[in-house]
Image 1 (tube, protein in one colour):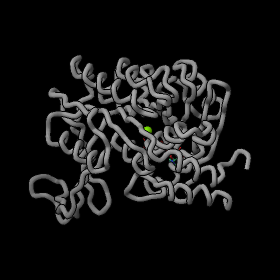
Image 2 (cartoon, rainbow, N blue to C red):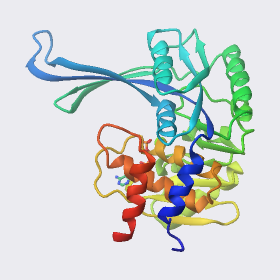
Image 3 (cartoon, helix red, strand yellow):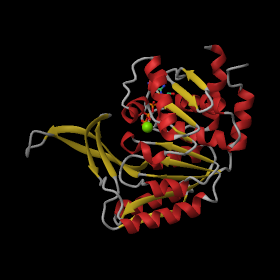
Image 4 (spheres, rainbow, N blue to C red):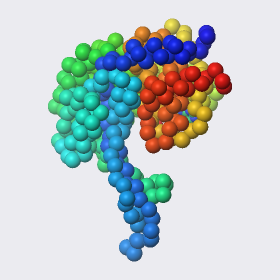
Amino acid sequence: MSGVLAIDSARALFARMRGKRVLVVGDVMVDEWVWGRVSRISPEAPVPVVAVHDHSFTLGGAGNVANNLVAIGAQVSFAASVGDDAEGRRVLELLDAIGVDRRGVIVAKDRPTTRKTRIVAHNQQVVRADWESSEPLGPSDRARACAQVAKLAAACDAVVLSDYAKGLFSRDLVEAANVAPVVMADPKPQNIELFAGVTCVAPNAREAAGATGIAIKDDASLEAAGTKLLEQLGTRYVVVTRGERGMALFGADGERLHIPSVARTVFDVSGAGDTVVAVLTLALSAGASIEEAVRLANFAAGAVVEKLGTATASPHEILELVGGDDDR
Ligand SMILES: Nc1ncnc2c1ncn2[C@@H]1O[C@H](COP(=O)(O)OP(=O)(O)OP(=O)(O)O)[C@@H](O)[C@H]1O
Ligand SMILES: [Mg+2]
């Protein structure tokens, strides 16, 4: 089975991942969903009137990484900043509901909780409204966030840094986090330098291109971008996710692996990157080789893009794809 992930090793890995303690540090968001039907055009303006029949809230951004870690059986701690508002309290409730330790969440008085409201009619998004600030945290909030992260990271098997460029990350925050045995970063290109020295960065291809200034259009430019990120950041690994093209691994010791995506049908690709960092992190902290970790993360991403309306996958769902791989 060389070069392939055997189902027995995948199963054994999941068993070792269970109960690992992982700290997620990142930009958290509330995704608000307003579902309805369009019955008429408004008399006030030429826009549709949506008659609402459902209204729900889910954790987005770094919160979705926590969702994915919990789905695989990790013990999760969370550090982030929220505003002093109803949505900030909702973030805490949503974290409580999935059993995440949220003592590392600080309340910043000078900014709103990031919230994305989608109005969806007949399963079509009509409009999205964003509440957010991407200003850097003020100095005292930054110091509080660093103190929380330093304390929590020291007690964890791994840390995930989930950056959506909403102002949380600074070099001192990354340094506070960079004490765990495995530190995984999902960076935005404009912040790439903050993540120097972590174990692994896992940008998507667009972000890797933005961070390096190299347009990724073929194998040679992909190799150039991966190598440049390794050199620029001094990380042990760089994993570039490539949507339907799969994933590429670059290791500082010359490791290279290019694997195609595995989804059989694609329903919903959003959040697949969060699944990738969650599984990569847990696999590495459970002692997987980087090649095994990348393969397992790719199967996990395949499992979530096959699902409608949820962005997490259970070990069972992932193993089903690993097992089915022989037939394709
Ligand atoms: N259209 C697709 N078909 C098959 N697999 C896909 C598709 N899109 C994504 N994937 C799987 O998900 C992984 C991560 O996706 P992608 O590269 O789009 O990450 P991303 O842009 O960070 O996603 P997001 O930011 O929405 O979480 C890919 O490496 C691949 O395994
Ligand atoms: Mg992403």
